[in-house]
Image: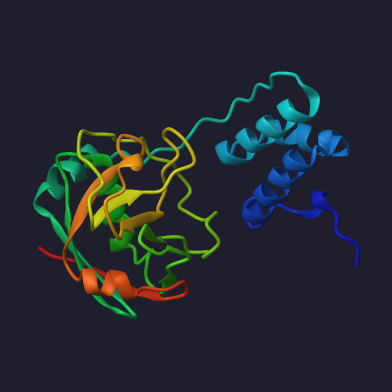
Length: 223
């Protein structure tokens, strides 16, 4: 069976498309230029941006594209979520209770709560665990590439990464989606680089037991 990149279709194959575009770029495969060029017209920001980045490497020319990032800002919800300050991750290694920093990172907290209300995180797995560093989850594909159909703005603050801090994973400024991490220990090299939006108030023992493949059964919101 012969594989043809052009057979992949957005939205069903977006993750696979992004993986192959990244491979074309890293391998310097100039034969991919005719395949990637039409993707600059995609209305999906991630697909168009990845294609532009790859083409810039492959051709040496700056690439332009029209797609804009999608954001999910709901001011009314943000005002209401000020009182939603605690959530509990129900995991296969026990409960992890989190305090959310609604005034420090309101857009991030809004997105996290709205996704939790939609059961977005239910049955997802922790796909990345680095001992004495972080556990990372929130990706419905468990690959490190998955997320919602929008990005959110980075919300950097003066807070620092101590043990049990809840932060947002990102691949650059304003690229945050649904993937989050919790620190095992102080990680000052992350300060000012990744949005902090909460901390563990109960359940660090569960955090320390988490292994790759452990499951988030539910995210319970305290009211």
